[in-house]
Amino acid sequence: MLEEENPQLLSHLESYHQQLTDLLAWRDQAVADQLAACVDQQGRMILARLAKNKEIIRKEILRQWFNQQGIYDIKDQQLDELLEALENEQKPQQIIELPHRYILEKSYATCALKKLDNPLKNLQKPQDHVIKLEQWYQVDAIKLMAVSAEKSFVKEEEQLVSQWLASDQFPLGLRKWRQKDRIRLKNGHHQLVKRVLIDQKVPQKQRDQQMVLVDAHDEVVWIVNRKWSWFERPTDYQQTWHPCFIGIKNKEKKVNE
Image 1 (cartoon, rainbow, N blue to C red):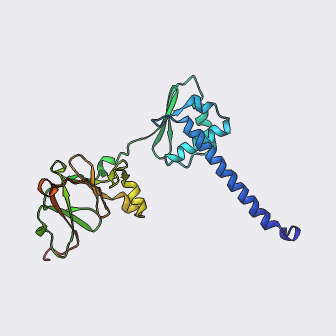
Image 2 (image 1 turned 135 degrees about the vertical axis):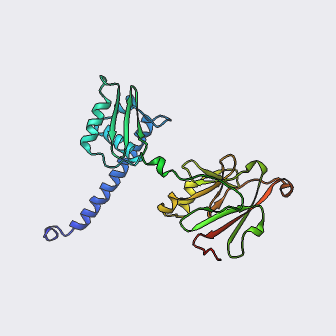
Image 3 (image 1 turned 180 degrees about the horizontal axis):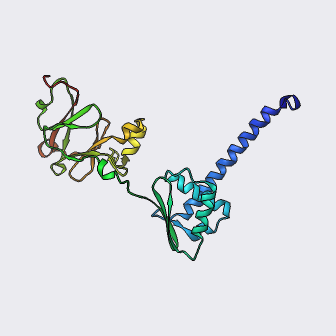
């Protein structure tokens, strides 16, 4: 019926949709720029800088700040209440509970978002291992890994990976990767383990369980089954470094095999 009144209706709606999309993108970028100006190097919100913005911008700055921390379900009314609390000079220190076990902690000139400890965290903490030679360790749902000084330890039907490492890198360790973990690259730069997992399109469930082999300095040597760190070898490395042989096998393998 509307098209009968205006044959250009759909094209006008499409044009309006594009204008609105562009406008929202511009708004989000403008808010991101203001947010960057309001947050210090420790990630705290500087309240005096926040207050310089108009109320509607202050609300969007807070919303985007929360979104960056993974908090997406703060309603407009809650944002209004939070802004009122932050601007209340009679209460220079406050702790305000937020969804997903976050708190907003106001302390005089700044406020900070903090995540409360999960009460199950200690029960669910992944087990870290100091690698003992020729002992098998679980690295994912179906794979086991072992490190040996002898190539003969790894059987023909098992996957074999080898690497040379310096003496001061031993003993090796096995643990789940952490957000700040990184590997060395050949060009002298470093790459975050997180970026490697993203680039290799590792599903989130597997990414959360990814194990890394680390040296005695807790530096990542190998993102297990994915990517090695680059270590510059001296010319006489075969005399001064040590070869290690890593075996990978399925944990379902029958005992009699």
